[in-house]
Length: 469
Image (cartoon, rainbow, N blue to C red; front, side):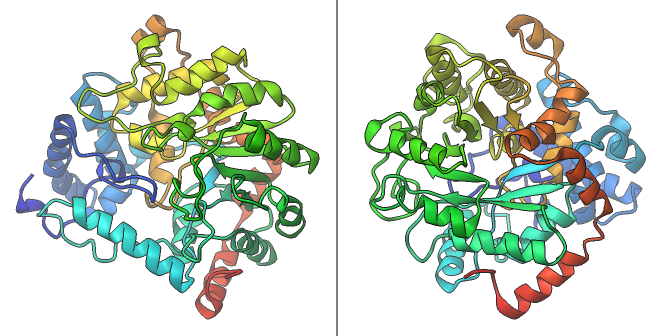
């Protein structure tokens, strides 16, 4: 990697060191650098052959195909099923990466343009990028565009997402990315402008903070959430301020009281952030199994599926084994097994950030997806992207469509084949069921949408700022 990259667009998105507010991107491995060197060398020639500027090539399907093919070469297997010509032939790339599945993204974000939020989030993320970028990487001064305008572009204009769920990180202070009122106001704006049903919203509950559980009824009446978002690491540990120290879904003082209230209010959908926690005890999904068994009438969507980042070249989860049962997604598998929660029950594994970070590690992706499909069942793995942190979500959609668990891993570990039917379930049909969405109506709405409402939303945003601020 040399100065030949200076000033040029930097690779397909999944080969870039992108991250969210919740983690710093892991360093490149030797194999990452091998793949990057290959696509960087081949990219300019392929872009010329497709008559595209290099930036457009990398952001389009042919560039995605080139990156996925290079990953196959690096690992010596066909994890991504697509022909070599897809790297330079748009029709071949569309054939391999396209599809007509209903796409429902249950984890999306943007940052309010409130002064405290915009300043705090943009400064923090900008400094993180600056601290980890290579010396030769220029052009990051404006990398942090996370406002509603960017949200509309990444989620609705440049991806096939039919319905998105807007959610937020925790926080009681003025620098929180989105308050519950802002999420609800954004949904109301979209509904009013002609996109009724295309955006749903959570309400975040800081169950470890006095008054929050009692306030859920008021939030339900005024915000109309489809589910409750919780961060069991505690408000402070999750970066939100406010002094929470962490709690568990199955502890009597906080978790059980919160779950009983969610059930009594008639919104029995709990979306719990688990994983991406730097292994703090309360970030573990070890409490998911016991809570799901005690509350069989509540659906638990486990955001990130308990995934944690590897700490070195060889630090992978791999298959589920007793010696690695206390790391990452394996913790969720262990919790469900220990509590006797069977596949197809009331626990759902959500893929936001997890899938994006696994794309360039396809062997690990095969194990993580395989383990989740066995643990929760093919009807209970749910699509999410953690947009807009990684740019337009189409890249992640396309990579998932092309991905396959190789036959040798299926034979050895009993993982299922990723059939078209399973992929359709994961990309949208499973979320439609658990979120109470009419799948056919959602498909028809998205297909007939002329996106005029996006222009109207942008105009209102330019005139008045973020909804509900």
